[in-house]
Image (cartoon, rainbow, N blue to C red; front, side, top):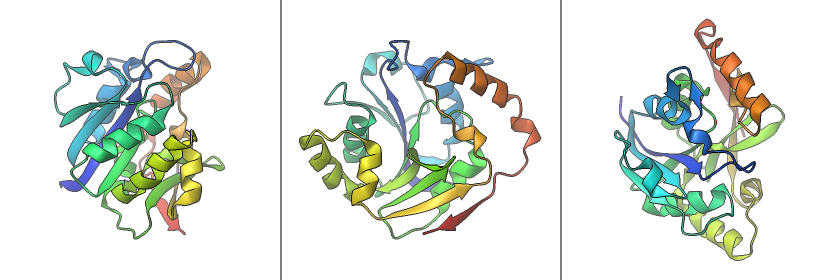
Length: 204
């Protein structure tokens, strides 16, 4: 089933620790980016957001590669540019260092209809603004935040209407900030086949 929304993978640049781009970290024979692209293949449009288009130029199965206009301010720059480039009014944002988010959950995000400005994952006691669906109209607010040098994506949620979605399995939303996180994600990937249902419920 085709999902008439755009899916944006936020790849950024090097990690904050100076390591290589996290999109190219591997689990088994595939890197994070390959894994995520497979899971969003039924979205109408797939965009890679990054700080350097050249290193992603050989990727197939995507609609376009969008390079940040403003470097070194975090994912909010990629969100702003790629939302402008999206051909759909509703857009899935997904960080490239979340390869364990289940395909079934991504589909639920994609097909769920909502009237708020965003549908955001909430797990482990915190919102996950880089795993959610945004309406393109939030880009005016993102632009204002950037102009005021407020680069926190979580700050954005304070200025828009949000519906939160609570996944049953929270362990698969851990991002990668250091070597220990990476080792943990590789370990958790072995559990994927044992979990049959990543159901969720919706609250306002």
